[in-house]
Amino acid sequence: MVVTFSYMLLFPLLVMVAFAGDLNKDFDLTWGDGRAKILNNGELLTLTLDKASGSGFQSKNEYLFGEIDMQLKLVPGNSAGTVTAYYLSSKGSTWDEIDYEFLGNLSGDPYILHTNVFSQGKGNREQQFYLWFDPTADFHTYSIMWNPQRIIFSVDGTPIREFKNSEAIGVPFPKNQPMRIYSSLWNADDWATRGGLVKTDWTQAPFTASYRNFNAQACIWSSGASSCGSSASKSTSASPWLSQELDATGQQRLKWVQKKYMIYNYCTDAKRFPQGFPPECNIS
Image 1: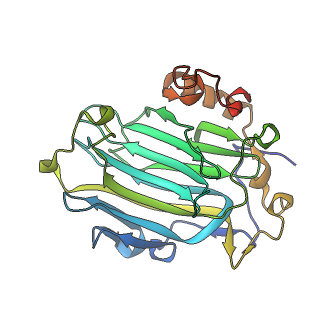
Image 2: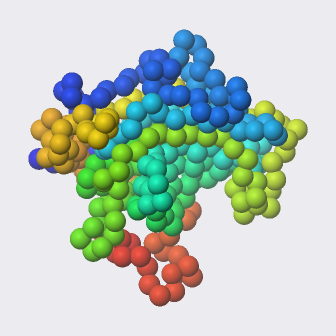
């Protein structure tokens, strides 16, 4: 059974469903010495960066496949030098990771949305985008749909990137290691803005990013077992997104974004790969 990306799906109780509610129940504030806060009875989470420190949080649960949404409002004004990272990651030296990183910029210049996928400790699969709106003016939804066949990044429901399972040609795919959600706001002015040429203006501090409306329809990993059963890849009748893919409209929207807003794609960087592009770049 194949389910297209544009459908709204309903899930049985064996799949964890966390809708917008009390963020205290889903996340732990992990660092920043009080610079990370959960406010408004759990409806809003903020991360703050000043010259002394940034801040961060992580999910209480680990997940092995899921459809995960979070609304973010990024640091406004002169955010040059700052990075807001929001990602899934496992642990260990051969970790898997699915990344959003928002690279700040001078007032009036666009944010860069940086994406990457790590499998078994290997990344270097960067794609970067401008956004078609001001991500500091209001909240927008950033989503990761992760199943055994593909990873789809989307913004406000519009797919911007698809990373397909290419194990058949020897490319590892994140499918065996449960991952936790992490987010942080930190100073990266050695590289984040124009390759490090533009430094953080600390007179603008503190810098704040905001989060709300977390929604996870996902398989929770706990005590060595998945809430979706012993073989999640066979549970598509219970969790239809486990076989979800882009429909024709989704493919068109993906091509539109990549044509108009993509500013870097490792799969077209011939100078970086003079001996030939990575094998997954040849998968249509």
